Length: 360
Image 1 (cartoon, rainbow, N blue to C red):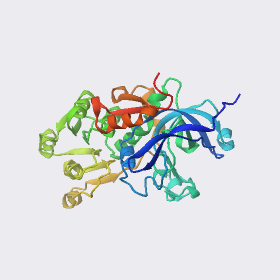
Image 2 (spheres, rainbow, N blue to C red):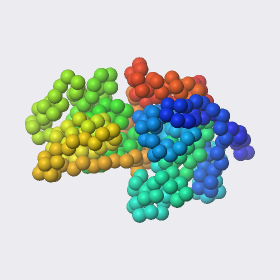
Image 3 (cartoon, rainbow, N blue to C red):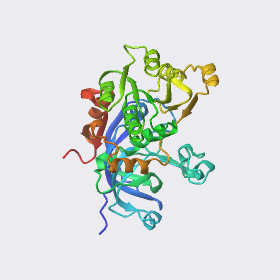
Image 4 (cartoon, rainbow, N blue to C red):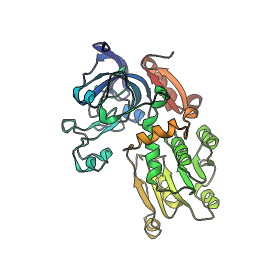
């Protein structure tokens, strides 16, 4: 018997800059290659406060009202015809990512759907959930089957909701092209930086050096990183001393500040790669002469193309333990408190979960 789906649902609705509330809205219907999922958990991503605060006007989102949220998991309760024929049945446990490429352009054909040439055009088949396409801070989520992955029975749905950010960290690590045993430098100890530590460690990094401050830097140390406090130390001098003046083959820039990006380019070894996931508000000053003469590469990374399945495998096989980063849980109805906890890092907050069904 098919699950009975209500006509309306509770969702977080953004009406403008910092103007949001929980409202009753219609439950969406799936297109032929889409499913409707009952949402179990949605984590707050570092991008969400920027969307809520209006830092990307007219881009994320393109208009209001809007439902954000993209780090989520849940259970399929209704499938479109094509989705059902492809095996996405009612009752399947899934986790989602934000990007959905059109599937037809040159970049999508190469597997680089994260930079789809039809980005921003839903009429051409592109979606980005929780950014400009309605997202997962809701009881039910409408999504393309191109943007979901099956969750193994051994994994909790709450755990699976972290697959999206962890697979972004994995993509960033892999794009640095480090080899097992290489030193890795991670700039920034926010959620992405901490997840990058876990991914680099799982893939065989040698020493992992983390630059940050406060409780999050202390957390990085407990995960096995060598801590460098940028507030009390000269980062360039300390890292140079640790590496006998050579610098680091792989630098993962997860802070997104002009200073951190500049320092990353100074601290990459000759022939090294700076793999960047942080998005600065202002363009940084780069040491171009040094980068040219020492062949330092600066690589930009967007989202997590094709890394979610590998991420799930790393979690299932206990190569990565995310539990130390999953710090807080709130009912979706208490989103304002959850956001305040995340933004102000209250009580050591790192990954903050929201649950439409409330806390058990």
